[in-house]
Amino acid sequence: MGRTVGEGKSEQKVIDDIAQYGWHCVNIMAEGEHVEYSFTVGLFQSYGHPELIIFGLPSNVSHQILAIAADAAKARSPLDLARPTDALLNNYSCCFVEVPFSEYRDHVGYARWYYQGDNFPLYQIVWPSRSGLFPWHHQATAEFRDAQPVLGQAAGGT
Image (tube, rainbow, N blue to C red; front, side, top):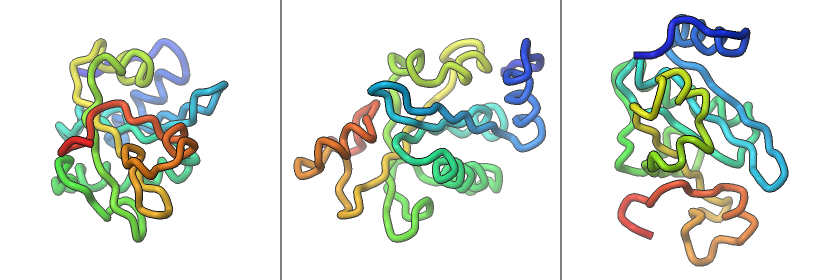
């Protein structure tokens, strides 16, 4: 069960957005060697859908991608997280990677706060390079890999 009262304005905004929209998008800006990323809070509470995280895209693009997935969950036709999908980016397929609990503390603090622990599933949306390669592909560049750290094991191995 998620929290119902926040201690500050940002916490209350998370709670209010989940109450109004079913989910909230948290954007984390790039800092030092850490890339920017965005994640959802509330999908699991509202729709029984895993929370989602995406790295290395501008926050407005990430929000649009997360909104597509959230709208599908809300409409009770969620994306199949076991398969690639072309529903999130024009002309590109994205994959989903289950994120291990060991990564939660470093990446999804607001979700952990909201759920009061790690009792929620989390999947990463992984997008391909312009040439269609995923970060785990042997021909993917180091810059591309650095822009999109993969937190878990890709479905079907690497």
